[in-house]
Amino acid sequence: MKKQILGLSIATAFALPVAAQQSVEVLHWWTSGSEAAALSVLKDNLEKQGVKWNDMPVAGGGGEAAMTAVRARVTSGNPPTAVQMMGFDLSDWAKQGVLSDLNELAMKQGWNKVVPAAVQRFSKFNGKWIAVPVNLHSTNWIWANKEVLTKAGVMTEPMTWDEFIAAAEKVQKAGFIAIAHGGQPWQDATVFDGVALATGGPDYYRKAFVELDPKALNSPTTEKVFERMAQLRRFVDKDFSGRDWNVASGMVISGKAGFQMMGDWAKGEFINAKKIPGKDFLCFRTPGSQGSVSFNTDQFAMFKVGGDKGAAQIKLASAIMDPAFQTAFNVVKGSVPARTDVPDTAFDDCGKKGMKDLAEASKKNTLVGSIGHGHAVPASIKNAFYDVITRHFNGQIDSKKAVAEMLSAAKN
Ligand code: BGC
Image (cartoon, rainbow, N blue to C red; front, side, top):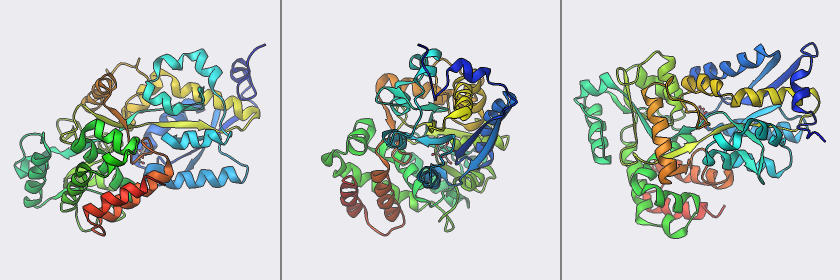
């Protein structure tokens, strides 16, 4: 007997007449200029196939507000067709039995062979595909305005933490904002990803923030991570509180600020502003973390919706996994493909570096899940970590207290 997927065979899904117009309702948090541009690539692709796109944006980087909206929709028995989702949130929903089984499509299209293992770990639940990965982002990046650095006399890329601090000091002395930052818990935690990786290396990072080993968490290294976070605090401007990440990117793009420490979705904003890597802006890993990558991957979870909505889900999933789409989308988004068989030719220099770093980190086992973006620990602990990191960044607790609080946050 032919296996059914989402209540329909794949053949039937593609054969359904367009007259009974298929549609998808997609809930996501891609609301910045580059995010919307990247999403349009997917939307246009679906619309060409006769699938109507009902957009359900829920603003808020990191997706916290979006996840609250999803909970409300599922609780009221009206889930969206597809939801942008990350990391442990995927398995949390899969556990509830509300996500569709995408295995037949995955087997037919050979997803097992082309999706990196680190991504699959979140796309599958109990061995079954429950989500479709659209990209692979990483968080241990710094974005810099080249002209600002030149004016400040920073002529070489900082290779060590101390060199970075010295460079930030020069930028500040030259009258610029050294670090453009948005004081929102998820952004503070994104910076923390890179600082933790740069300070303790991938083994420490994994032990402390993925395995939650009390000895690694409650260690002088963690205190040093917080000390470095406090150092960074001196370089942000007085209006940083609550600022959106893309506004912070805009400050670097326009030459108001020297650096932004942010995931590579920030690169999307530079590209969207027609800036060229190497010429207008620089991308480098948080100094001390080159060789390691802290990653997150955006995936689309398909909720069990049944009927002809199931057919549209199959089209959406197939469109996302198409290698040409993965290129077209990710060159705009700033991320790299969630497939290992996509060439880097269409990518800019930062994208090429991202792909090379990723391949190297997968091989050397220095690829770790982002703490800030839900790929290290489940949401309950992630949120408790956010709280400590943010209170410390705002000077409410010192580094010693922050270490102790991280230890108790890990028990959430
Ligand atoms: C997502 C990115 C998104 C960023 C800011 C991250 O959690 O993975 O796709 O661009 O948040 O909204």
